[in-house]
Image 1 (cartoon, rainbow, N blue to C red):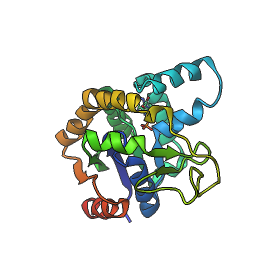
Image 2 (cartoon, protein in one colour):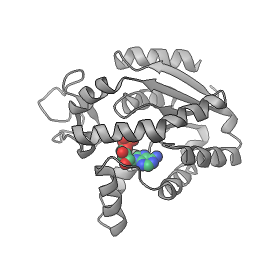
Image 3 (cartoon, rainbow, N blue to C red):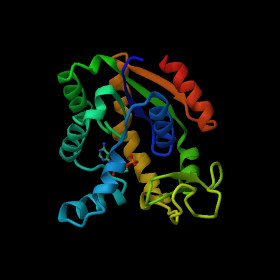
Image 4 (cartoon, protein in one colour):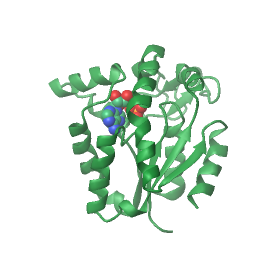
Length: 217
Ligand code: AMP
């Protein structure tokens, strides 16, 4: 199968994480989530990580320069030779330009496809309030649409599930605001290069995956 270079776009709570996991398994490419990388890195207690943690808790964007460093390093890892799926990057126009430069240097920008999963703001607020995440293995559940088998316990590793700080309603509203102001232009950036595919994010994860794979082919 040809290599796949996918950029997943859509508001927080659109189901990007769930789709990313399913798509990357199906296509056998690494799932690169900048949110996951940042959450992992702020577990260490350093002055920089404390600063980054505060920015994330407020639902704001972490600095472009730090993200550039993170994404460059990650895309240079061997597993990305077979393709990748980016989830959470780029988040603004400046990051889009940076990504374009990095991928152009690798001669793969021409092969990139951006996949936008669209969902309304009201639906997102409802979804994220009910989202529970595993702080150990990163599995994500929804108390209504995809509950764990045992109350508040991760099916995968048995850890106690949590409501992520940035999934609290006030932070969700802030993240949506940031999304509309800063991240939505990224959609038009890829559209301009004729690289945009749109998928409706309402429906079961399996149904959405089906549409994604259809569109990718
Ligand atoms: P996510 O899990 O993708 O929703 O990311 C959680 C938080 O990590 C975001 O609200 C931002 O604070 C930060 N973050 C993740 N990716 C980026 C990025 N590309 N640029 C800046 N901040 C980011």
